[in-house]
Length: 585
Image (cartoon, rainbow, N blue to C red; front, side):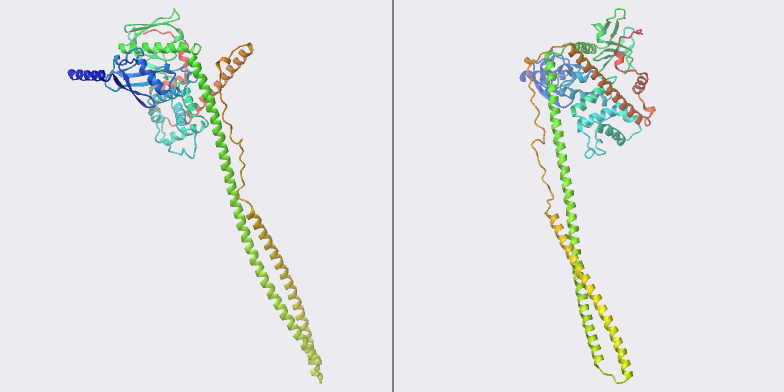
């Protein structure tokens, strides 16, 4: 077996000598990158190539990590890549990760790509439970992660179930409560809807600002023993060194802030931490593995260097990066305002169009009703005309009958009746004829009046018909759409060009400037306190909402420790305030 392995290694070495290159795969949080490297390349050459490929300038936070045996190691910048003790099978795999964490993400992370890589790495660490996160904070962080992915919440697009395929919460949090996936999605969506108006970069920054206050954020843990052989955990982070009980990774037993450490010495397998206070005991510890000791030493040196660097004036490179970041942020804000203005104008145009369409429908309905009224008036006029004609014919017929009755009366008067009886009968008939003639005359007059009334009604009906036609013409002559005047000033002008000349910049700090600066710092401090208060209220509200559904028997030791710290008011930052003393038992 050894001979076969040796032959394979010899074959790989021969191939590299022939090709004079070797292949490397670099796994980032976003994608896998493949490179062909020269045999003489040092770690610095490969690292700089990766950073250039990513467009990354804040290189001091990152490194190339590789797996070796049962631990991990970081590629050394001044050592040849192939001289490292790692598997040489091609392609050689490295992980591009954050090696050091900032103290304050908002102040130190300048580039968007730096912020994005930190966001992806921290989110993965929280979901994989490498960093403990309380349930209420997990929900809030998930809402910011969703906002960074999907943008502003839109109820028409982000309907129930749109998060069903997303990994949003640590499995520990899901198992701790009697809540369905739909219930979790509902609570996350409520928080997500409140973030409206933020960009992706702003959502990622809010995520990191919350995550950096978690107790295990940015801490590298190592198993160590003190000089009496007691098993402990060493935590190395941006603030200093911390000593933990193996069963409690949240609350250190003792902390050594970097500014209170006089010296860290390392010999063979033993470390010695010497505090500035000479009265304090020197804390000594060791690790069982030489490789782990080297890793601890690298992290101590790197974190301490960054700690000191933060307390010095920014280099010209950092100042330039921050200036470019401010210009880019201002440009994005102007572009965002322009897009919002365009969106507002588009929405107003759509509303105007909808109003015109509704007005058109209303006019069409009115025209339809006017047509129906016109048809009814025409039918009424025809009916009245017919009735008037019938009344006129009846009046003529009655007048004719009245004339005939009068002629009969004259004939009866002319006729001589010789006898008294005939005379009486004649007088009686004559009287009846007069009564009938009178009755016929009254009826004729009534019919004539009715005919006049019908003629008047006919005239009014025709007048109504004429008015209905004129109204219909008036309605149909109106245009359903009215042109919307467009002004050249409707859209905001393009953003101004930012031209800065370093030669023209001068600074003259006077008393008034210092007062103004102090007032601005005080104002920022008040705003920060208000934001922190709002965030704490939001987390408390989320905790109250889901507390009744918690399954106490499923709490992990870290959950219990976090609850105890919360009740005591112990925070991450309070653990690093000063050096503590304890007996190394």
